[in-house]
Length: 395
Image (cartoon, rainbow, N blue to C red; front, side, top):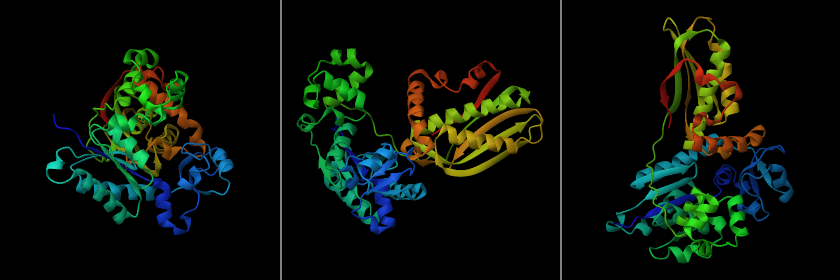
């Protein structure tokens, strides 16, 4: 079986880097991108602020206390999306298979390319090309799988590169803290430390059954990652244009309360799918079809978001403007368009800061038990109403 060659490239402090390209006076200064109020959180921070202990997703109030001289910027997500698209195009134009993991993170499958030219030489040149053409700093890791390549990139940051050759995986992993394993959060890390496991070398020697007994399925993942095992494939990049859901009712209705609740449920499901796929939307459209088959839509351009609260607010506003004829309705739908890659951190500002942990917890429940496992209380009996899903198109 042919050995895989997987490269991981991650833009260094991406939001801050873009801001510095737009304003050179920010170079070398402590910069934080995020919400300005105490309820906001840090979306990105420069390496100068990290020396003071500032980290992404940290409450802005704490970040100010740690680094009072930091320059705080609200952020321009349209600019970040444009720069991300520039980097994506370079990757797609030059690499055989590209996965865009987030707005600033990429995996490349270079398997089989060694016979044509040196893979390490090629990805190093690609990294240089990105910086030369965009002005953005980017770090690189190369190994036989996604996990080790990502960890190599993290060790190489900022503006570095690291190759882990076949057979060197254990030597690379062993001295690293268990917290360096992707998806190993604070709670899991603390549990491992309570068990006396602080580095990956020790974790790799723990019996698999013991880890499964303690952590369940997560224990299997921890054991595999600690032993350098990761067979997950590269998912080729594609850029969906929109995501939509609509329902056709078996019995036409003018029950406005019911219609609004159905609309909220569609929005809630779409937002979950967007977050799961790593997208945000910049435009929302609401659609209704009357019993006489006349169909009407209204749309609104918005700041990029995948927030239930933001999207439901806009959806209801559009519905109230759209539903003027007071006739029986046979279909209602919602569409998110102008999709851009972005993680949930893009929405962790001001009021959204308090809701982000809630969305994360709800999404975890849906991942495990299905989309109907949790939702708004007012939608609890919708599944008993006589409606049939006609379209479900998400990225």
